[in-house]
Amino acid sequence: MKASNPILRGFHPDPSIIRVGDDYYIATSTFEWWPGVRIHHSKDLVHWEFLTYPLTRVSQLDMAGVRASRGIWAPCLTYDQGTFFLVYTVVESWRCNMYDTNNYLVTAPDIMGPWSEPVPLNNFGFDPSMFHDDDGRKYMVSVVTDHRVPKKYTGRLVVQEYSMEEKKMVGPTREVYAAKDIFLEGPHIFKKDGWYYLFTADTGTGEGHGQTIQRAKSVFGPYEMYQPPCGIRTEKTEAYSILTSRHNPELPIQKAGHADLVQTQNGDWYMVHLCGRPLRIQDAETGEEIRRYPLGRETAIQKIYWTKEGWPELANHTVLPDSETEVAGLPAHPWPEKPARDEFDSPVLDPEFQSLRVPLDETYLSLQERPGYLRMYGRSGLASCFHQSLVARRWTEFRFDAATSVEFEPTVFKQMAGLILFYDTEDYYYLHISRDEDVGKCLLLLTANRKEYRYPMDPVPLKEGMPVHLKVSVSGTQVRFFYGYSETAMEAVGPVLDASLLSDETCSDGAFTGSMVGICCQDLTGFRLAADFDYFEYRAETP
Image (cartoon, rainbow, N blue to C red; front, side, top):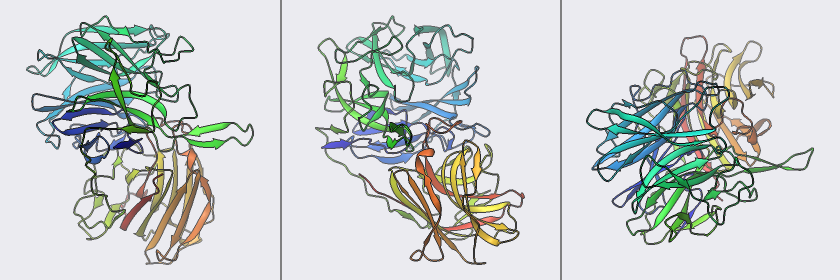
């Protein structure tokens, strides 16, 4: 049985994996998207189902006002003595000299919850991880950020003990890594055969990304970094990575790093790791290849083995990620395929949808007021970091169609509703219904890239009192919008747009998420005019 990478497709970065009995769970970062932290479930490491969000209350996660790519960074999911532990960072300030990185712990007796109120931890930096030692003591390891100019170290990691009884960090904070050249983040601690292993992401989170491992006889170090014999290191700022794509831009799996380890019930070991699939473009002027990642950072899996000296290496005897990974010894367990179309017949919104920063509540979204429709009340504009009326799902492939039907009768140009391709508050393509003083009810296309806003087509007059079907087709770099009064009679509208502009590499504020497709409604008058959406459909072409 083979796992096709990535196993979690589209915007699923920073994986943290555990096994509980015969069940495997992966937690991934959600950044500014609500609810917080996505958890997937598998029985065979090949087939994965989305399961739940543990952070569903504002008391656990308050992101109102946070900008793009802040919010939830690198959650760590662990399990000990019948309890699930989730440690996470809420980043409020980034791209400044003083980061605000608030770290918390929530626990639950079951993966489905209920999850506790958060316990505050230390805030030295981001990417906190909980380690449960075999003597019952618990420790947290995290990055240390440094606002001083110049910084004393490129990268620092600290370990501190956590008391379950007192529900707080206790004892001294011990520095376990400090280097002037090699930057490490995303730390996890494991214990095997009497050794403490410090597993860390290295060299940023872009195409230079990698994964290193160190070990010590004490949880507080000193740690020795492994230098794999098959690795390549070309400069002093480069880590001794046991997994990386940095020297092989031709590989289909790039950005490999930020990994976690799991042992199967049969004794085999696997590594899940962050990765990205590049959209390859030829520069018109230079002819050189440009790689962009509109799907964001995803999650892949590799098999590993332990050397006789006690170090983990990839089973392929290289440091390069495979596009397919053999998984043996576990019975296949596929999950039922979800329908492509959501008719909005359920009393609750499909959890595949997320909103921005704040909960999906009845004050702006209802499936009850008009059964069979999603009613969305217009609120703030698309630049808002507070109260948007927008729900969206991840792009999972480079080729897909998404469609909806909307009933909306705006009275002024400040009221809008429609279909959106969204990366962040400064980068999106928005086909929407509005009203123009000269045209009347009309269809408009708004594009945004790095705060440069354009209407690349003239308003298209629309019939009053009629539902309008909206559709978008994404094919590689090309985006094309359609509209009509029937699903079987839709016509193209507006120019062909560039899908690659909705990616980490082209955006100025966001940097860590991925492209989403969804529906939204704005009413900048403050009167909360509602739009009724009849369905939402997403059909992806899987390679």
